[in-house]
Amino acid sequence: MEQLDPAKIPNHLAIIMDGNGRWAQQRMLKRIVGHQRGAETVKMIVEQASLVGIKYLTLFAFSSENWLRPAMEVRALMTLLKKYIRQETARMMRKNIRYNVIGNRSDLPDDINQTLDEAIRKTAGNSGMMLTMALSYGSRQELSLAAARLARDVMAGKLLPDDISIDVFGSYLDTGGLPDPDFLIRTSGEMRISNFLLWQLAYTELYFTDTNWPDFTIDEFHKALADFQARERRFGMTSAQLNRRN
Ligand code: IPE
Ligand code: IPE
Ligand code: MG
Image (cartoon, rainbow, N blue to C red; front, side):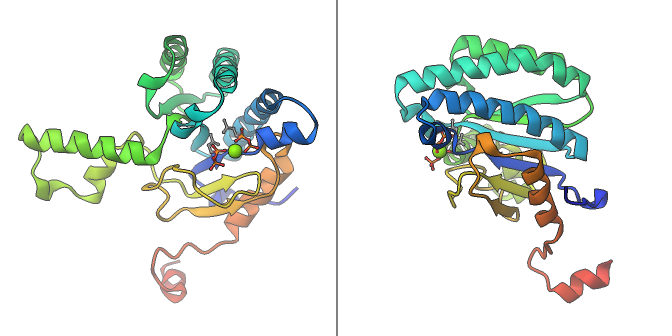
């Protein structure tokens, strides 16, 4: 296993958990079996992330565009989600993990929303890692809704157009209050963002692996973190400037 520097653990890790369907198809199994196996990987990575000291973990679990999938797959995913949250809340309490959701919750079925509310309420007092699930989430949708809310507040006289700074705009997003991700992992070999956290990923380090999400292991997770630790985040500055600051 890779040796990790505890001082250089990403504060906020975001993951696009992709490849469940292909994992199943390669084994002549139904896509939903891939999602079930993917849920096992989620359990393992949530635990590992909190163990290595990640403070914010954000998982892309269901996109706004995923509603376009066959109704049977969508239904199966919702059932799996509900089961996952119900089963995992006790473990989240033990691990001191707080639960959070971003995305268009009004699209989600009522029973899912109830389950989510319950999990959020139960874990609200936990002070460890914050686990954010992106559900029915699309970044362009989030950005346009934020713009609409801002416009309404300007019209109501709560805010002047000139008050709209980067920080103010960011506070209108679903992720208001969360720091930007330091590191993004996408599994399954796809090299795209798929409408995830477009604003928030401005200076995030990106990592792509060919491994499908159900096959993603603790070892690979550590390998990804070691890769992050070897990078120099310059934020537009020169290397010399950064080294002078240390
Ligand atoms: C990711 O796996 C899970 C969701 C998007 C819900 P996919 O279902 O996208 O798997 P592939 O990309 O078809 O292999
Ligand atoms: C992105 O995966 C969404 C999630 C992981 C939930 P997709 O499988 O939906 O992305 P595309 O369609 O390949 O871009
Ligand atoms: Mg996919």
